[in-house]
Image (cartoon, rainbow, N blue to C red; front, side):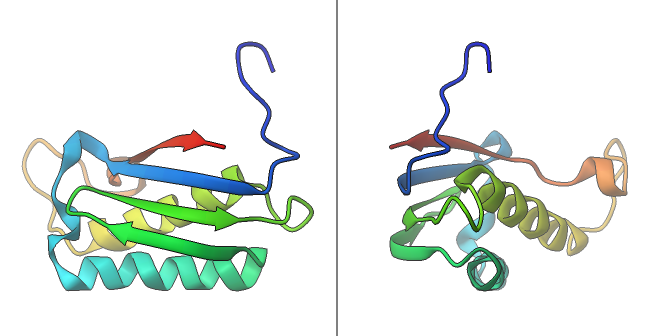
Length: 114
């Protein structure tokens, strides 16, 4: 992995994930619920422990403990972000200038610190 750090052996992470363009998506309870439900779903799948979290209007923070044998933090975050974005964007009607479909889904970015 040229130019990238490997976190494969780490288990404890502080993660911040920001909505594209810092859109204030999480001001609505239903979008927070979508995020929480996806986190719970992938928690059952990847068996990670949540030590704390905060959902802010345009981002969320959490401290998570993962078992690398059951799923790396990158796997967990990829799945949570992808399916949360798909569910939230399904609630928005297509508008002029914004294509509908899979490729127009809201993108969430992440910053990881061990």
